[in-house]
Length: 361
Image (cartoon, rainbow, N blue to C red; front, side, top):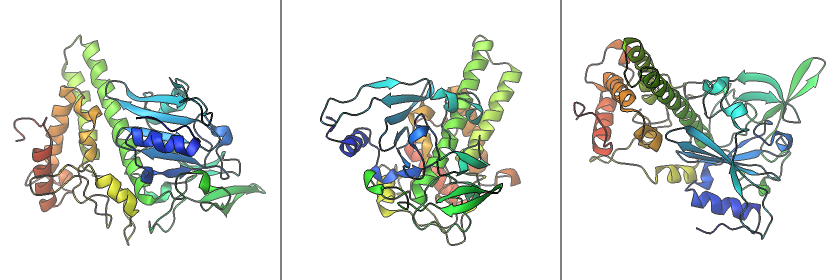
C-alpha cells in the first residue's frame, strides 16, 4: 500500500490503514511523555492509536512512533523521521532509547507497555502521581486517566482526566483542561479520547506485559536448566501461569460506575469487526459495559501472535488454571464467573482456538 505524504494527517491516516489500526481507537495524553516530551503538554496533546498488536503515537509537530508486538522479543519500538510534505516516505528506524522507560520498573526490566496517571503542570511535567509502575484492568477507574483526555459517556464520578495542576503557595490548584480548551484538535484525526478505547488499551497493556514476563521467565529457566525444568523452575512457571489465568478471566477487574459506560459507536463497530464467533454466535469480544467490559470474561488477546507462539510449557499450565475457573463447579477461589458465562466461554474457546490441550476438548 502506498503511503500518502501530502501532509502529516494524510500520512498518519494512510499509515494507520496500512497497519490495520482503526482511527476510532484514538486516545489523547497531554502529560510530557515519550521521546517527544518537550512538545507534549495541555496545549499539544499526543494521539495514540492501536489494535491488538500494534500501537502508534503521534503529536502535532513531532514524529510518528510505533510499538509492534514481537512474539519472541515482546514490544519493539520504531520511530519515523520527520515528514517533509510531498516528499518521500520518511525513513523508519528501530529505537533503543524507548527502552529507557519501556524496559524499567513498570515492566519488570523487560520490553513492555506503560501508562501513568499524573497531575501535570501547564508544561506537561508531573506534579503528583496517582499510579505508576502498574498496568491492567484491575486498576480502579478513579486512579486512571491523570494527564489524559477522557470523552464520551463514561459516568465515572471522580476521575482524574481533563485537569492540570497550577502550583500556588505549596499546593496544586486544579484547573480544567477539557479537550480543545487549550489545544487545536483540528490538528488531530479526531477530537475525541473515548472511554472505551481507553479501557481496551489498559486491558491490553496488562495482558502483554504479564505474558512477556512469563515468556522470558520460561526461556531463562530452560536456559539455566539446559533444556530441563526442575521442581523449582516448574513452581515459578506455575506462579506465572496462575497470574496469567487470573488476568485472562478478569478475576480482579475494576468496578464499573453504577450507570455503566457507553462506548463510541464507531469504535465499537471497528472493535467487533474481526470478532471470532462460536457455533452459537458468541464471541470473546462481545461487550457488556453495564457492570464490566465483556459479557464473556476471557480475554480476546488469546488470539494474538504473542500468545500463539508462547512456550508450550507455559500455555499448558495457563490452560490448566483457566479450566479451574471454567469448570462446572469451581471452588470459592475460582468462582467469580457465573455458570452460564462459564459454559459460554468454554464453547467459544473450543470453537475458535486451535491450540487447546486435548483434554480440554
